[in-house]
Length: 92
Image (cartoon, rainbow, N blue to C red; front, side, top):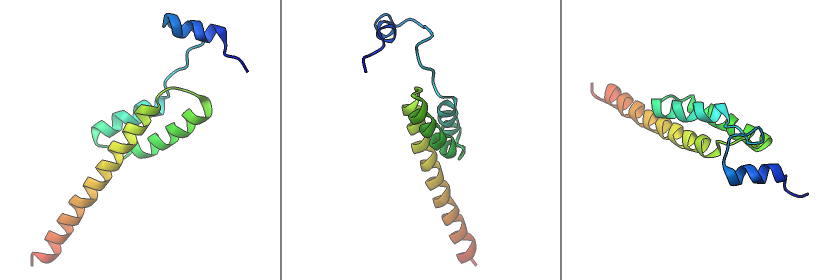
């Protein structure tokens, strides 16, 4: 099937019009929670990627960035917990 001529003209002029896709809200939330150090970035990022794949919305990069940062937070917290647990149990 051919491309929608209205959609192609909107890309050319870069004006806001009804045919432009919107950014997925969960992708934005995933990125925000990732910068705030929240682990909610992980489920929001996964749900956002699923919705973006299904609906064609924008925000895939934000969702992936939120996932990467969220998993880095999870790894960091796991390491810190391991260090704390080792210190508490073996410092006696």
